[in-house]
Image 1 (cartoon, rainbow over the protein chains, first blue to last red):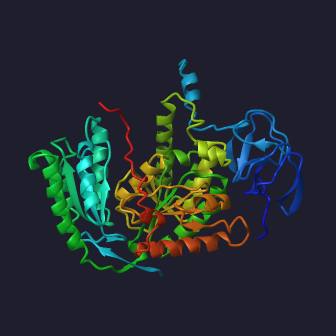
Image 2 (spheres, each protein chain N blue to C red):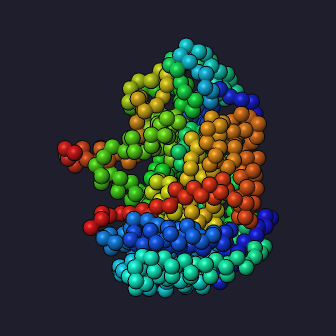
Image 3 (tube, each protein chain N blue to C red):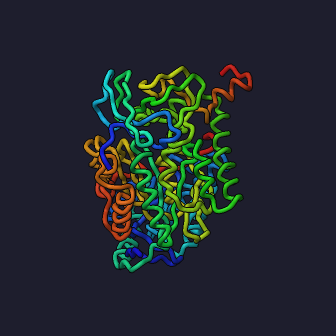
Length: 107
Length: 390
């Protein structure tokens, strides 16, 4: 097993990879292995260790896939190479705020 | 097959420790309990802010949790202290319940003793004789089938779901192949992982229960009317790259490995089914509350997977901490026991890491101390509440 800079869990389905380097800076091109091929992803922001990068375009409202399963949805259009985190994706579960809106509560 | 060495209890359970527990029945016994535990070698205090002015469901939860912790096989004997008289959380009802395990239980009431100083003296003397008796007990050979294994994670980051949690899953699979049982808890942190979990359920009934109970916890969250973001995932999870509760859940569930899920139990409930496998326990994601529930069910040792590093340790159940993040190992190895950063560095496989955890678990079961036991870190104790103080 070689050291990877970015790790994709489900290579068929996932549209994000996890960065496993502390040196990933805006403008760098990093290799991401997907189904035997090395994609070259140009990183559009500094991405900290353990944070995610988009490896496929994700449109607003589309599902973000990791582990081959949904980890939420995009709040805006996300380009390949963008830092994927709380500023551009959101959870669909446990949303008390949505439940309150549905009940028409102003809280 | 792994063997370990533990203390046989009258009810047939086997303990990894031989603790003398000094237990507060209510908040107002805490200072006496602390004085006794400070005086007696090897005594472990459990103090808390509960046992009074709680809704009836919470009062019963406090009673059940405290009694079940006292029944954990890591406890050899118990001294309970209360200050006057409460419903449930009093020395009479607690002594009766804990004594069902067959282990020695002594009790002191502060008012009946004539106040805090007399009560401290009485409880200290009782504790001394119990401690002396416990010191004559010897460890005897036990089998992995006599082991109930706690699984938990906290201060998770994205390395948890990629490395330390799946490695812990391999360890749990091996424990279960050798006849043991594992507990997976933290239900809000399973929201989004239902599909992955139900695929491993022993029956359609178990699968339905998994969906229903995770769903009922979600309903409690929805009823708050508040946005979950910022609470779950937590601030440290977000710093570590976890963006949503679903992402946290999918990573967290991995620590249950590939073994069959045999059943679902309530928070702190004993697991009567002896079939090897995974048992889900309906606790919150709050780490101290969750591992307290697991200890109350009788687990002897717990492995706590922590991408970001952690100080948590239950006072009665040795809590082995593991990390797959080299930065966290470098910062937090005072209280983290095992470095599994070799997984992401490409040096060891998940299965090899699982074997490293397994070896550590068997050694700790047999008496090796965790770092937090040596440092007397006991932050991993808290009782979940469902209602208000009244």
